[in-house]
Length: 219
Image: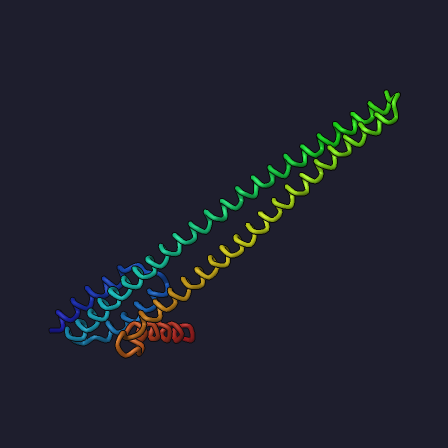
């Protein structure tokens, strides 16, 4: 009778109050309270209990979908970040190679110039001095050629790495977009009947909760 209806209604309301959900889900759940308050018999309470059970099942299924999507996304992001980290390490290595090449060039040029100055100061044979200067100029020229070749190769490698890094970052951006769309689609599917594609009871509850909240704000 009435006592059973009241007891069942209170028990179900206690369960609703006990559920702790994110704001969006809580708004959908909030539509059940006015339905409970209007329930006049056990059958009505039982129907609301089924609605609540369907909501919880759909919510958990949605969570599983979101978690699976997030796990996949995190795996992809971890891989991409590992590639970025590898690029940074390679960039440091290339910079070390360039620094070593510059140091070697500077040392060779300085050594050759110092030697040539000493020879000029002690020169007593012009022809021999010319030969010495030409030899050291050859050393400097060879060092410059080697340096330019090394820097050109390094620059090409760095350019290729930049292109590859840009491609990886673009892939990461696309993965993020795909995840965002997948989560949005999962949320939309949770609000629609699987057979008809029409809004289901969760969508109805969400709409009702929104309208109730709006009417309270306007009161």
